[in-house]
Structures are given as C-alpha cells and as structure tokens.
Length: 285
Image (cartoon, rainbow, N blue to C red; front, top):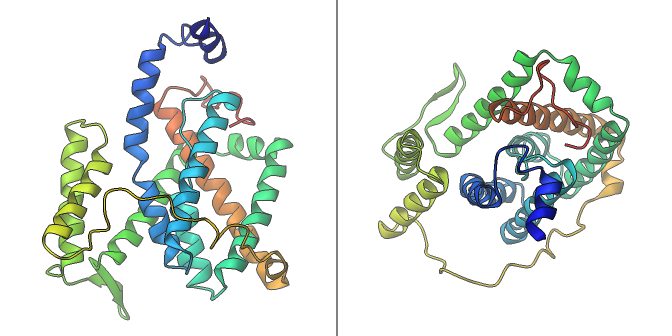
C-alpha cells in the first residue's frame, strides 16, 4: 500500500526507477552536497555570525528545502543554502560595503519576499525562459568561478596585488598546501566516480591537519548548537534605509540568476528539460 502511494505520487514506474534506487540516489546526493554544512557557516562566520547557529540553520534549511522540492515540485533536485549568495552576503555586503550582518539579513528577507512574488506571479518563469539555454547553463559556471576565486583567496593561493589585482601567494604555507592537496584528492576521487568525493576529501584533509597539529580536534559528537544567536536577528528597520535598496535588489538578482542557472544546469544534466530546453512546472521549483 505504501509503495503504491509513493509510486503514484513520484511516478517511479513512469520514470523507470524504484524505491530502492531512489533511496540509494538520496544517500549519494547527501554525501555529494554535505560539504555545504561546513562551508556555509565558515563563510557566514566571517561576517560575524555565530558558526554553530549557522551550522544548525544550514541543516534545517536544507532539510525543509529538499522536502518541499520533492513533495511539492516533485523534482529529484536537492536544495541547500546557495554558495553564491552567502559569498556575496559576506564579502560583498558586510565586509565590502560595511553593513552589519543583521541589516544584511533584513535585506535578504525583503529580497526573498520579492523573489516569492516573482515566483507566484510566474514572472520568474518568464525571465528564465527568456534567457537563451547556453547563457542559462553558463550562469552556473560563472558562479562556480566566483566561488573558486574566493576559495583560492581564503587558502592564500592567490593574494591581492596593486599592479595586477591578484598574484600567486606563498604556496609553502600550510593552508595553501592543504587546499591544493584537497583539490587533487577530490578531483582524483571524482574521476574514479567515488560517491561522496567532496565530503571524503574535506574530512580526510581535516583529519590530516589535526594529526599534523595545524587544526584543533573538537570531538566526534555533541548536542546541536543553539540557533538563538542568529534566530530572527535580522534588522528589518535597518534594511529599510534608502541606501539599502541597492543591496536588496542586488540580493534579488544574485538569488534569481544563481538559483535559476543552477536549477537549469542540474536539470539539463538530469535530462529533465523538454525539447525546447525549458523546465516543466518551473513555477513550483
């Protein structure tokens, strides 16, 4: 009875799959994207947000997003906090423009409300379908390059230079060595099609850094940190300042094209686009 209900809702037979296959695919997807629960709080903590609170919020947001995408939109696409928007939040708005993270959170709230309106009135769907497929696929690659640049900077592989803007950093420093080693390990495992290559690479390099004394061991298990330091901490009145309008619209457009580019890119790889290169039921996704 349960299997029949699941099959009717998710149309497993129609898509030539089974409950067992979907469970394995779900575990594989989790292992592939689990690095986000470490990277997201690491980036946002640089803006002054509590690492533990962001860690828990990241897990909760990903869980709720995946449930909505699976049960409502009925697409096999996992959801989690965007790695493009969090980088823009920290390095562009808070550290770059000098706003507090509370005011920046308020701007995120208002941009999210605008995004919601664009979605329910199908304006977002119209915008996405108006962009050529090649450009939609290129957006995801461009965001990836942006994140790669931030990672190289944080690892000390590239540094700022007044003449050339960027220059090669000191590759003999531990952060640069670990970053390069992790990159090659993850690349090799991905080439060998090892499930959870990113997660395994991150954990492996972390353990190596602990053993060599370049990182502190914090234990294997603990109770989840409290989300109180960041829960409902957004400064809505501060975000209503006239100077924040540009930030709100910047968040909106980054969110719009980041999520749209990634969604179309993943759907293209998964064979979910129709013959015209459009994603059916896009208003739900």
